[in-house]
Image 1 (cartoon, rainbow, N blue to C red):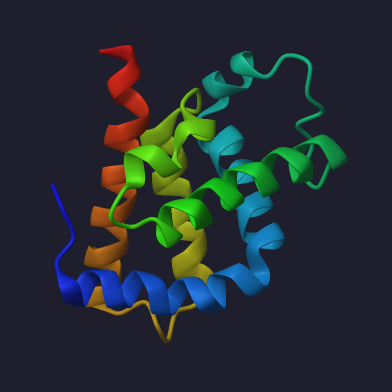
Image 2 (image 1 turned 90 degrees about the vertical axis):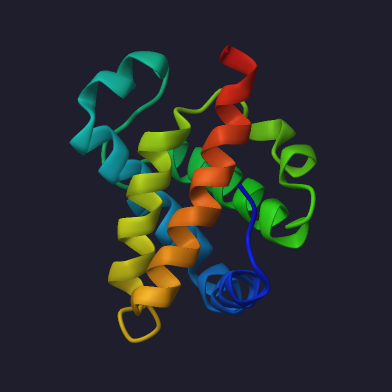
Length: 132
């Protein structure tokens, strides 16, 4: 799967806005992950997973930074995502998609939704290849 030029433009354009709120969006996305899929908490037994905890914020900043690396390296997503390989990619991608949509409703039209869904699916595929 690969992104077409118009999808790349959407991703890069919206990333400019998302990156200004990266900490809040990342923390909210992880909170959604742990709330919506509580079984994922078992992979973080040493973390304080309460909403807004310092450990959650630190980890979410790493996640969002890795997504930012994927945006910057949109032609080599696999190489850019080396750091994120152990996350539950599909669930996290869904939570990130919902979070971005809630923060940028005016920008999140059908084309943006499709482009981001495709981009995050590529990220998920790259991250899960190691387990196949």
